[in-house]
Length: 316
Image (cartoon, rainbow, N blue to C red):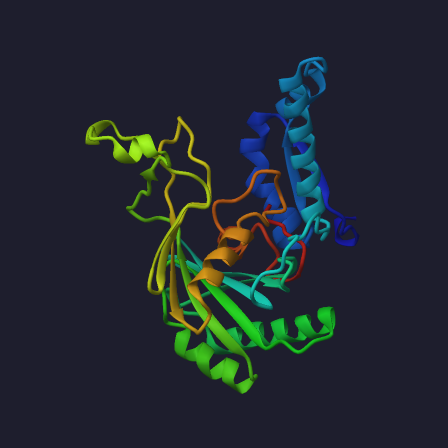
C-alpha cells in the first residue's frame, strides 16, 4: 500500500517513541518511498487542546503551535505560504552546502528562483562528494535546470544567478565561470559564514550617551538588521538578541566574485532570512544556505529520497 501513497503523512507519537522510531520512520517513508512526514509530539497535542482559551498568552501559544504544524504540512505538500512583498535584486539564487558527518560528505542544494524569493526546486544529491568539491557535471546540471525553471515559470530568459556558499569554499568557482559562460549567464559567488568569532554592538543613539565621559557605563546595543560593511565583506545581524542568549552573533558575508553592489548582496541575504516557510519564526540564515544545510543532513542520513527533484521540503 505504501508504494501507491504519495501524500504527506502526519505521525503523532509519545516523546519516548519519537526518540526511538523517528530515524527509522523517516528512512522508510522518506528515504525509501519518497513520502514526506510531519512528526508531532503527543504532549504538544495535549497542551494544544488543554490551553486556557481565556488567557491571552495561551491563546497566542495555541495559535503559534497550530500555525507551525500547518506550515510544516504545507511545505511537505509543495505549498508556498508566502512570498516577499518586495523583489530581490537578482533573478535566481542557488544555495550550496556539503554535509560532513562520519568522515563522509554529501552535497545538498536548494534553488530559490525568482525575485520574490519563492522556492521552486529542492534538489539533493546523495552521492558522496570529494570533500567540499562538487562534480562539474552535477553543477552544470543544476545551473541548466535553474535556467529552464526560470524560463518556464516567468517566461523570461535567466540572465543572472547569485550563488550562496555556506562557509569558506572556492573550489567550485572556476567551474562555475566556465558553466555560466557557456549558458550566457552572469553570476555572483557569495560566502555566507554562520559560525564566526565576532560580536557586534553600537552606542545607543542619544546625545546624553554620546557625550558621557563615563566610558565604562556607556550604553551599547545590538539589534536585528545592524550591519558593518567594508569593501567586499560585511557582518550582518539577522536575529534579535535576548537576555538568555546575550549578544547576537552576526553572519559574515563576503563577495568572492561578481559585480553586484555589497548593499544589494546584504539586503538580499537579510530578506531571504525571512523566507523560512516552515515556521512563523524567521531563520537566522538566508534560506539558500539554511535549506541547503538541512537538506544535505537529511539526505546524508537517508531521510530523503536518493533523487529528489521537486519543491517539496522533506527536511522542514
